[in-house]
Amino acid sequence: MLPKDFLDKIVAQHQQTPPFPATSDIKKLFTKIVLTLFPEQTRRHFNTTDELKAVWESIENGLESLLYSMKDQLSEDPAVIAHRFLDQIPVIYDLLQTDVEAMVAGDPAATTSYEVIRTYPGFYALAFYRLAHGLHQEKVPLIPRILTEYAHSKTGIDIHPGASIGRYFFMDHGTGIVIGETTVIGERVKIYQGVTLGALSVDKSMASTKRHPTIEDGVVIYSGATILGGETIVGKDSIIGGNVWLTRSVPANTKIYHQENVKVIQD
Image 1 (cartoon, one colour):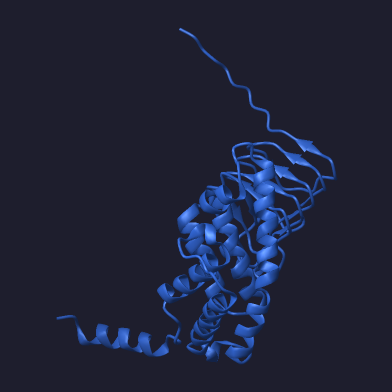
Image 2 (tube, helix red, strand yellow):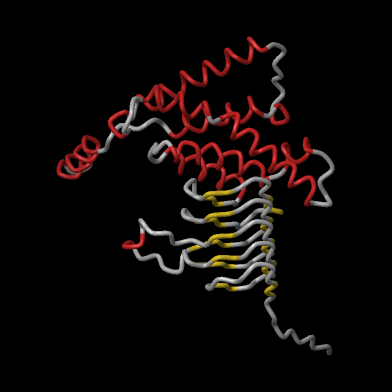
């Protein structure tokens, strides 16, 4: 039998921990949103608007229920937050359509938007990120992180819900990409696998400051590049080569490549 003082400590921990919805319920509800928006992801297809409307009413009820279970941690009425978040869904949907368009146009291997929505990890990660970002803007705690970490576990793409990402965003392959909380990404940006948009320092005192870079419109960042710092700006239409380590701003239309001497030794 475990010691009583240990059990008392755990009981105290239970009493001090605020109520919060189950992670499984959060994943289930937001997966339902993605499947409802994108029939490419599911075998269930709706035949009437009324049928679809009933599903959205169930989603709204489900979201309100999640938020009510943590209402003491919210600054507004859960129903108001849920309603306002769902009002964002058409905008989020349109943003994701631009992402799909960018993936079809930017990847020679992509044949159709159906293929991108059904198979591309970048689309999956962006779908959960854009929903999580909407909740983040509503100042809902923790649920946005749970959503993006869920997508991270599925795709290897780690996007903080606080990041700001413009239209037509394309992550080619995706795995290993890290996008920090205060990153700002413009429109038509293309990023390859293993790219990190991170902070120069992990000092806790910097928590409320802009710690991650700004990537302007039309920038391409190749695999393995690391761009750090809240004051670092990559100017419009620049190209950052693979494995570049960048901690300072570069003007528009800059090309930066990593050079490495590789010797081939033959017997």
